[in-house]
Image 1 (cartoon, rainbow, N blue to C red):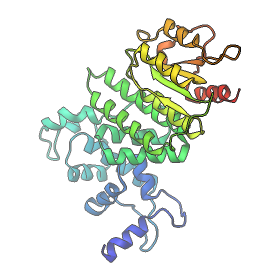
Image 2 (cartoon, helix red, strand yellow):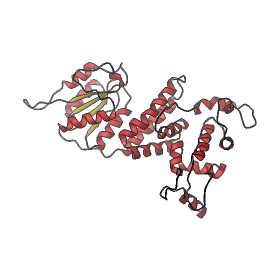
Image 3 (cartoon, helix red, strand yellow):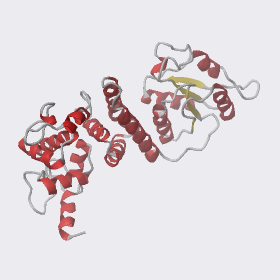
Image 4 (cartoon, helix red, strand yellow):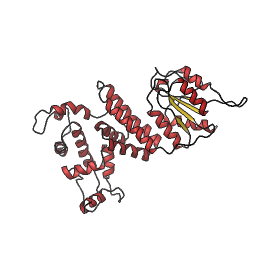
Length: 335
């Protein structure tokens, strides 16, 4: 590393005195790009902070951030970075019309074909991190997405990161897919995969079984949406509760066998769709018992997911979300 590069890295550091404005790392998280990308745009295209004194930690103002946001929007339309940087510096906002033309006004068929991919996701009033994650997902930027997800979980905790950052972004991707003629499926799969990976990397070590404290988690037969159960598994493990996760579409006979073999305190059954939610299955699991005569016990069954809406099973828990599901399991284990 050269002395000049070392000085640049030092100025970009986030451990120095706070003098107002955003650090390079904070800017990168808001944009949904890697910090190295921000530095490259500064070095190659002159998109660095307007005000900067040598030897000081660089800070980005709202105006600097707006310029970089225009850069992100332009590159998402398919423009080459150099051209996108020129337009970002000019202050021209990307539009459907201008995204289809080059700097000299000639038609850009490729940009027209790709411009809708950069039109963004309708996120509404959400945390700033959602926008960065959404941008990274739309660009299929694996490194930036992993960094943003890891940071969100570290800063907000698993439950808050899932509820307030990840879920709104997943919902926005789902809406984008539903309203775009089956497009953006790759974005949904890409984001879900990286969320799953982030959960595995940040979750603590598996907790050993304790009699009467284990929770069994499984999707009902025909259901393969495992991500919400992965989050619940990680959240329970984080709280020192043993979990046995069986994932997607567990056959009935296998679910029954797993419950009998583990003797769990609670069983969480996830159904994403009403077509997969099965009242008879939930009632059958809730009626299972084990142990010696006079001291037999059975599991508390949690019906989880939107598939159970309007199909409440009398006597069974129906948590409204992740936090409530965690609280329910904790109370069951504490009994």
